Every structure is written in structure tokens, then in C-alpha cells.
Length: 374
Image (cartoon, rainbow, N blue to C red; front, side, top):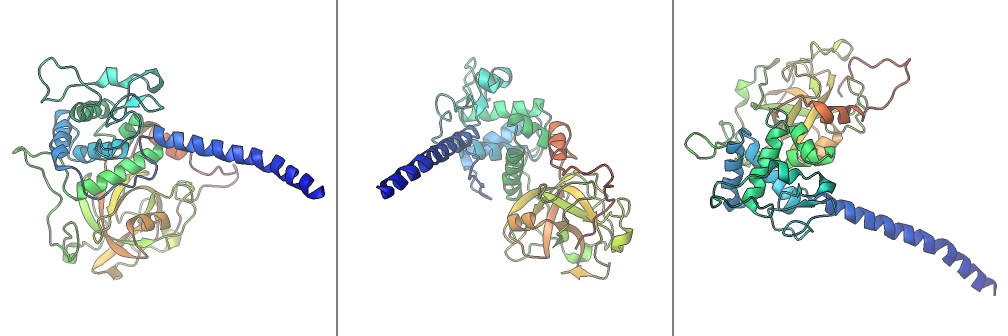
């Protein structure tokens, strides 16, 4: 009798817990569907369908989205519908639970803000007078390009993508996937109509993009213009607080700009200029030349660099990365990487959202002016 009583008691406790677990699982699945396939979609380095490339390039050219426009449109198309091959609700008919539809998952009802009605355009190949179709690949891509343009692209890509989908994780994923496409040569059209490519230089063995010779390293601070790729030596840093007070255990998509070999006690924002004296939150696309993996990182820290006599394969250390960034790039310790300054620093809601990730500090605790890199 006692055993039966204990068994009944166990069921009384466990059954409600099981119901809660199942409910949470259902919510997670619903959120994944609302994200248009975001959950678990890491994105390939290549693999953009050949037939879609002219659509991405044409839409980017139509709305003046610049050299990176085709790659970002392709990344959104991949994340939202795996290039129109996904069977998720709303891709080919109806809407997803958030009210979005089509291969670019654009809002079509009040729940998603009726975005489609305000930005829809017909692709150039459509017959005259044919209305735009949210489920048509070309119409959806051209309309998404229009949406990104009115949202601030190409001047503020992070802000425009955040307007497209109000998620900082979504912004990071799209920019990271787009970086891989850009590295592989999916860029804007030239005046002759052919695709432009990435920078020229001597190609290293096994490298997916050109790496210039080390003899071009100026062994000192450099100017890094937007869109200008350069090869840098990178190393791992383990700081927990950035120079502007950011909690780097939360803001893992950070990098540290290094000083030209100054002792850690004398590092300031003014002398940490090894990567071009970039403003706070400047985004940089960092790519591993040995495997093509890319990630978008933001300047939140400064630190002591290596002495000018210290080099890695002829390059002086210019950047420090978090352990998370190294993991994304497939690194372990120091390595030669390609860094490209992107449009930024980000403004508006993206910058505000990132600022809110900082750990609150007591009023009596001053924000450090610098955090030495390890």
C-alpha cells in the first residue's frame, strides 16, 4: 500500500513538470518558425544558386546597395528560406506565425506590420502591369532590396538588417553568412555587367582569397578605409571588460584594437592605432584565409600590442579576438587573418541594443580607460 501511495505521489509531481517541458518545447519550435529558419542555420561559405546570382546583383544595383548588397540579399534569402527551398510555413503559401510570407519572409498582415504593401516592387523581367508577388523569388528579392534601402542601407547595414528583423542575433547571422558569400566573389556588378571580385595579391596555398606578401606590412599604424581588406596578425585576449565598459562575456562579438607595442600601463584610446584608430563599435569583417570562415566583430576594447620587432609570418600583431570569435573562425591562438572595415559604427537601435548588453556598474566604480590585451 505504501508503494502505491509513493507511486501516486511521484505521478502527482512529475506529470505537471512534464507538461511544462512540453509546453516550453512547443514555444521554442514556434519561435524557430517565426525566425524564418534562423535556428540552426549556420550558412554555407558558397553554394548560392547560379540562377539566383543575377537576381541578387540586379536588385542591389537597382536600389544602389553597393558592392556588398548582393551578398547580403543572398544571405537573407538563405536564412529565411534556404534559397526558396524551405518547407516552413509561409515560404510558398500563406504566412508564418509572425505574419511573414515568401522566400524573403516579408510581413504581409497586421501582425507583421503590412511591410509588403509599402515596399513591394516588380522585378524587371515581370510582364508589364503584373503586380508584385511575395512568393515570386525575383519580386521578393527586389522588394527586400527596396526595404533595406529605405531602412538605411548601404550606409548602415546593421541598422537596416535590424529593421528587417528586430533581432541582434539575426543581424549577426546575416552579416556573417554574407561575409562568406562576399569572400567567394558575390559582389556588386561592374560597369560592364560582370561581377567584381575581392582584392588582388599573391595567393597562399589553400587560401580562398588573395593574401598580399608580408613585405607590404608598414610595421606601424595603418589607415583602414571602409571596404578595404588588409591582412593582420591576430591573437587571443581574455579580458572581461572592454575599454568602454562593455561586458565582454556577453558582447563576445568584440575585438581589441592594439597599440604599437606600448606597455599596458600606457595604452590609451589615442595610441591604440594599429588597425587605423577606428571609432567605438566600428564593425570589421574578419576572415580566416585557410578555411574561408568569416565573422563580423565590433570594436569594444583596446590593449597593448606586441613590440614592433615581434611578428607572425612577417606581420605585426594588430588585433585581439575573443575566444568566441576564435572558435567561429576555427582558430587556436595566433594566426594571419583578413580584416575589412565595414560601414559603421552602427547607429540607432542596433547601437542602443548593444549598449544595453553592458553590465551595470556601481556609481563609485569608474569605467576603465583601457583593458590590456593578453
